[in-house]
Length: 58
Image: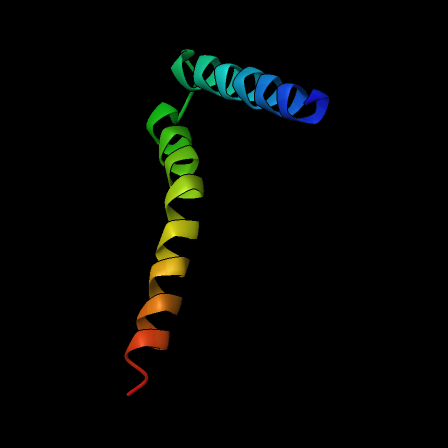
């Protein structure tokens, strides 16, 4: 129970800090947003490719 609460709070805090950093006025703001977006998309892409190769092993 403690582990679950701690990890949820930690993820929320880290996500909030990253969202605040992504909205600040910095150089290459769109580049930083793309990098953060790619970090969430690449694992799903890899899993999709792996499952595609498992179910269609041509």
